Length: 202
Image (tube, rainbow, N blue to C red; front, side, top):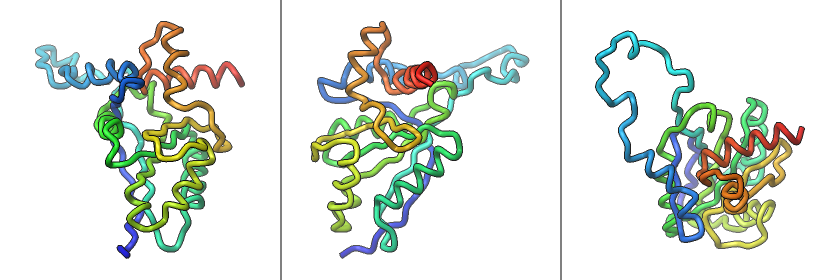
């Protein structure tokens, strides 16, 4: 049995592409990833270059939960969720696996940046099947996943949670609703739009 790997924390940006059902959701994100950002284009106006951005680009706040011998996954998740909401963050939980092609595209998206106004208030808690299978702790992985989704072994599962940790919406569920509003269903647009819906509901 391998020694459990300690939990790691990092901040990165996010972009997603996926299977046929999710492909449309991430077209816009990949298109933006291939263009030059304003920071990389030459600018002869020095005063413009020195001006601060009104809405700077940021990466996603991504935290990956890995097995730790002294703590069960559910307790680790609950502590991280409580810290994030205490800091004023909304939480997205992501279940994925290395063998899942759609998850690989999602990992690429997680390296991109978007305007702070769209994703700056979100923390993504990522939980990889591979980490927990290697540690022979898939029972904990599946138990936590069942809080929001009874069907196991389908990836990725991306769920937006409320402050109490209850399911607000799963990413695939948002696709038709966003398209019906005339919005391109990308991850940053989903998160931005869901914030406005939460504000209207309160």
